[in-house]
Image (cartoon, rainbow, N blue to C red; front, side, top):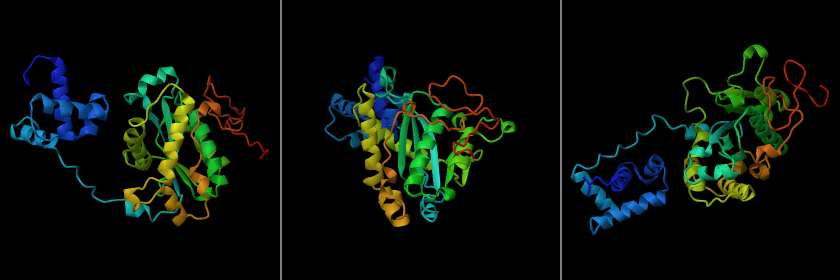
Amino acid sequence: MIRSQNPSFDLRYRLVQTALQTGIRAAARQFGCSRNTVGKWLRRLKQTFDLPCSTGAVGRILRQAGRSRRRKKPRPPTRSLAAQKMQWRAFGLLQIDVKDLSGLPGYRELIPFGLPRYQFTARVVPEGGLWLAFSAVNDSTYALLFADRLLAHLKACGVRLRQLVVQTDNGSEFGGNWNRKNGRPAFTKLVEDKYRCRQHRFNPPHRSTCNSDVEAVHGLMEPEFYEREHFGGDVRVFLQQAWAYQLWFNYVRPNSGKGHRSPEQLRAERAPWIQSRVFALPPVLLSSLSAPDLPLPRQIRGHDVLGYVSPHQDGWRNPAGG
């Protein structure tokens, strides 16, 4: 049967071999299926060969027969930054990133029926708190709306924005492709001028791990949220599901890299002057927001979100007249 010309069996056999070599989660990602599907075919190959043993024993038999490769053990990091990050200033770094959800099996099929394609994610370091929002497209207008809403909330909850660094990658939605001859990018002006944060900082070149905290959340949410929840076509229900996950992540879920404490427990220990509701900002569709004083880039045209574009060169207007 292993040498059969049946393409269906060959595909499933390769799926099972990949799972035995790299694990169920990695195999599910590689073959674009759910983890339940991988587990099902692991069991069925066992039944096909009438093997009275566990899937672990199946793996050992395949390895002994030379049918699978030895799984490489991951290299331990040369140095762990977890302990070092806990020495940083409380609520001192906010990482923001955008995830394209169209690559997630089981979810991408619902995007044409109205579910959002992009997830805007923010995470505070080192406490690890999470905030979410969603949109149909990824552009600088939505990045501005997301940051504007979140920074206003953080300020209202007692976060000291003058000590806060906002860090992003060099994506165009954050001004990474901005022509510096026209001054600073609009996202930078929002962070540094409107909210007086310490700095908007782009990831340095060739430093792929700089935004690792927020990118780690994207990896966690796939098995904990997108692969576990059942999604219909109702956007309101989807936002409620995302809201429940965000609350669980911030107030209940222990982080093994932070002494098995939740972000809320770390806030209470490290920054008790910040209100507990700081982690309770519900996810929204960014197209439902508007802000008349956003410093929109001059070259942006045709966005479906209304916003003020200043006639001045810097594209900034202070509503208070300053």
